[in-house]
Length: 402
Image (cartoon, rainbow, N blue to C red; front, side):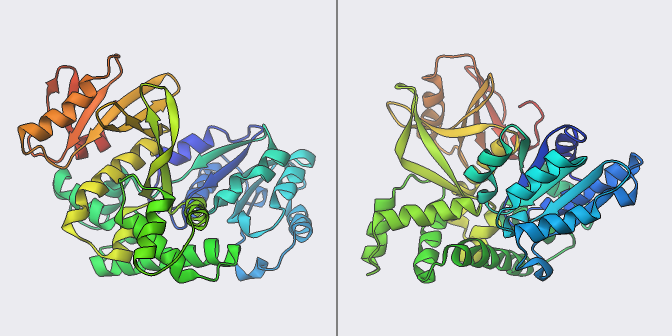
């Protein structure tokens, strides 16, 4: 088990505090393993085995369990002579779980950790029963830094720029980087994760009958990573394939893909009007291997997926990210975190003066003192141009300066 301190340390800062710890993220991103890491840390601190209760609710054993049955079962297992540390994994499978957790929190001496693979975990029910009583942690697949840590356990690392290419192609699902799998083996594993997510978290939960329609929308979104599009453009595309679908249905499907954490929606921000725009959003995928396991790897997709990788890294580091709309075009990412802000342009290569002018001029139009970056895969990327820092994407992903 390879440690992921980025999450473990952040979550354990809330150990023995009056907050329920809720971990969410796409299936197989490592939530269950992170729970086990926390359990191991607690044992190192001297917490006895009998104080720790760990239950995984996606087991067949609990398939038809009610909230009342869940409450009775856990209550029987509580430690009688002090605090119980409860680890409740994939809890979204139990309808009414938030009432159970609230009762365990309120009526017993507990420290509670919960995971789920659907944003229903963060729904209005939680707001009703757990307002002010929880902290949430979004878990992602492996960052580039984590990928390097995993890979060096079973293989000799190449230089960071070569490894970035491998990371982009193979993605960051932890299970695919525990040994030296081939590309095809990795895509087989990831395709199974994709299929189980589509079936369990979307089709089954929402009683969707037109699965083919849903999958066509997924493929459209995957093919248009980093491009602005609307429900109408998806609808028009499907009509061109003689598949009639209305805009509202497209919105519903995209929303369900978000709730299962397969897609991330990135809104546009009008930098002149200082407001979020509700049209022509972009979508990014939870992991590049999702796209390649479904559509196959193509060299022409690399530029968009580099943008995807940078977007996910900004989210991992706690930034809220949107696209900046200017008079003349767009800033790829405007990232904010409390009082911090940065502007980021991502381009695969700067091969001409025209490209260079386009990438830098949009940032030069912004007259504030927040950091501005142009990220590229050029071998000699580096330096500073009128206050704008140029970096290789691999160096940016590994940087500790933001």
